[in-house]
Image (cartoon, rainbow, N blue to C red; front, side):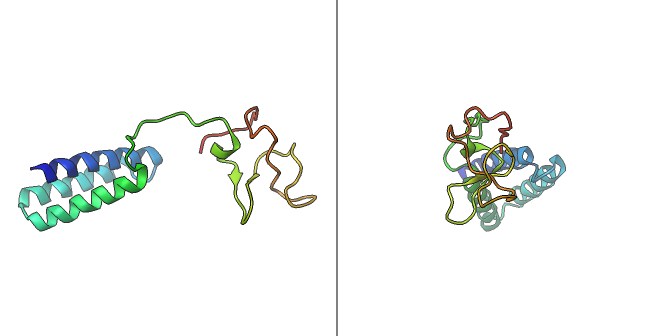
Length: 126
């Protein structure tokens, strides 16, 4: 049945993504997988459709139409986990103390470097 095949594929992608992000443990994915198997075995088409919809919606929120492949982030402030975006701001760095303070002396956030972070030694993937 195409709906079941799609649900299985969506769930497997969702589980892989959530485990990789640390949102689920392997045991969580196994438990939900067993629940899905039981629903399929029960042949309740409405319940199958509801779970298929749930899996499809969640998968779409994580990666849209692109496959879940790890891609290296560009080495720039915009892809660094230290970037913060206070209201109406292009961003500030929460890590580099060698840059001028963003909002006056002693402020913990710092202006972004002119090179956009391409040479930053503290860059870290989100």
